[in-house]
Length: 211
View 1 (cartoon, rainbow, N blue to C red):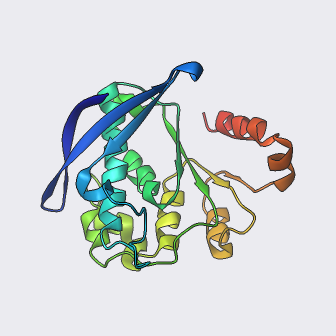
View 2 (cartoon, helix red, strand yellow):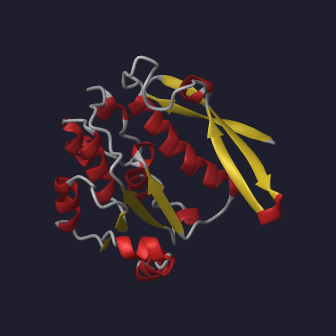
């Protein structure tokens, strides 16, 4: 089912945001997707067929973050927890705290970022940082992206998150050290809890302490 779309302006370009919804009837779950032909109609996800980091990955991350939050607003669904995973979601905490913080839909929302060992070592284009500011976001809020690497983008996500989960044993050591040095609760990686399934209770307890 395709819902009516919206537009998101990135730089000087107006991009169409298409919202799609599917249902898993046996589980009574609805799944919502955001789409845009320019950013997502391609066979590869992060790298092109020659193994090159897509030049528009920065714009795709901006579109994804703002698109998700605009979709939540359109659906009028107030989330308790917004859980981010992967580089394409790493701008969500910034936009939530700086642009959507005054929206009643998000008044009770907490944002959690899970970090894994798949953070890109690639650099985003130099123009990435300039395209991010919107609303109350100022250039100094994203100064960490003066060097626009995947690690620095993850650090930006951590800075604006209410909680951080270390989801793998081999997350970049400097990134983990950075997270431990900011005033944000961190749930460290626990392999035994993952293997036993106890991590579900640990995640739930971590969520509860953020309220």
